[in-house]
Length: 182
Image (cartoon, rainbow, N blue to C red; front, side):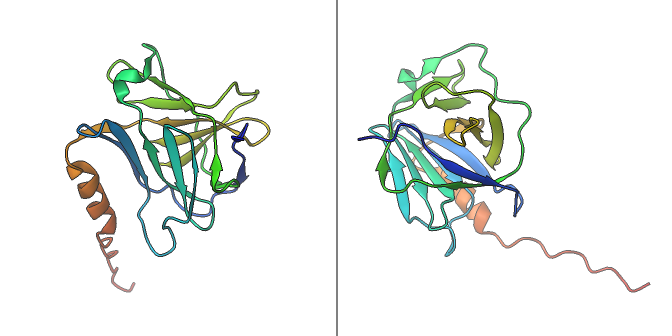
């Protein structure tokens, strides 16, 4: 039996917001959403999935990747769809593992650069938290996932864009300048 709601645990933020972005694979007609870099600490451990959407989670319960196997021509277009404007930072951990979920409703803008994965009807009030840059969790008062927003989707051919994104995440950060003693 599929999950009726996806539970998350919300704590104060412990780290900065990680990079994230959606990459629509034109030849596969699938959306891949990378959330932060893959590393020894953040690699696949488990999942929550439906027939059309899969959330990949690491061992600590962090979301690390989303795959949406529904072609965007089948996403519901809503002309005035806007992402939430007041989004908070938080440490979000997914509490369900190796479970089936109900398929979300996929709602997009006419240019298909924004996607909302809507899960059922959400109870009020709603809170919005960054999962990564350009990826937002919409959570209801019971800490159940109401929606996931992907606010920056780019077209990708043969994985070139997502590959470049991942390569950029692996780059060593620039050393901080050393200031002379005073």
